[in-house]
Length: 286
Image (cartoon, rainbow, N blue to C red; front, side):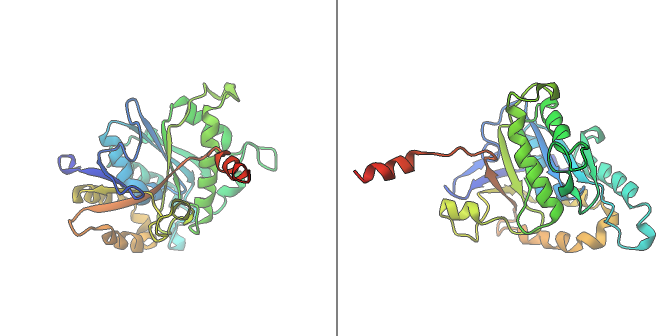
């Protein structure tokens, strides 16, 4: 990897302020920091959040990739069907290894493709364990401080499921409940990333931004970062035909200065209601 030529800065699209390093992306960043990128399928994290992964590592964070689905639907020929899962496991270790993420930092939930949503919650309908016990234990045991979840908006049923699981399980990690599943440990901040679909316009509309600028954070990186991410994506040989359009479209990230961008929505998965506007409304009636 060409770390000497890595450069990172982040824009807040509301204030238009640009900050060098990881601070704008991960507010209050200070060690020890642990980032968990929740990836619906094994290649989603590298495609949609690769720059953020390298930014976090560059700033000293420990990075984990949590993969929700097995990748069993990712075959392009019938000859691949019987071996595709094993092949993708090997490719995943190689891909993230190229970014300096060791195999023991790759966590697998092992849900079937297109079926993650049926595992949502503490307990499934048949009485067996859902996703939450494992995610809660992981977030607490690893003392995760930052989480990235996939886009839920018109992208893929497994992306929707992973977004739900992450967003609703994250706040529980810091609550004084279920203490036999680890010592409560709060996550500091959460980001949503996109793999290919546009993000939900809600944040832009509520914030008064142009709805075409749906992300409230833009990570700007040097071309060296894109080269390293592109090289890591190349480990997914089995997915070549499936993701070829996504790989080709990465040129659209290039700015006039030759930098590249990745976009996210920073959000609070448990926002508190403010009664002040309602009190002001009532008080105005006299």
